[in-house]
Length: 113
Image 1 (cartoon, rainbow, N blue to C red):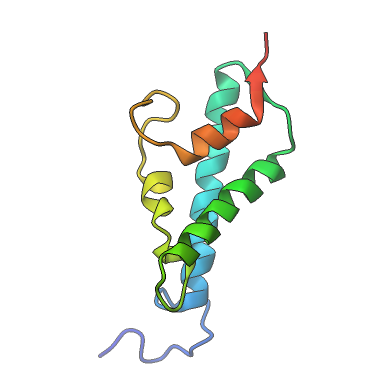
Image 2 (cartoon, rainbow, N blue to C red):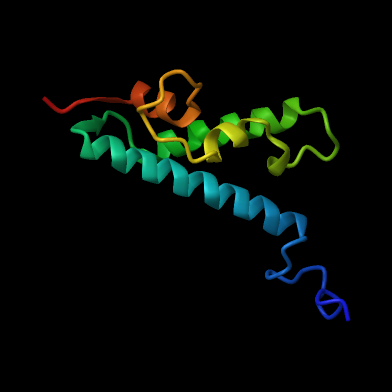
């Protein structure tokens, strides 16, 4: 029996529902941004803008990346930048890679000393 057969299209627990996929992408990105902000703060840096500005900047990068995929529909889970954001690389230590979140955070932070 199909485990999804009893679910309605609007079921918030349906992992195949496009809206739930988009919500999960947003949540994953925001969680990663928060994690990276906290790591930088532990290293003695402080933010020069509200956290919400950093969240908005990174989310905009995801939206733009999804649009650039030229796939229809241009959903957030198709954003190429997600691989870079959610790959789990060590934050702030691996300068050989592009680091969308770290670069964004650093542009809105300064050393506390």
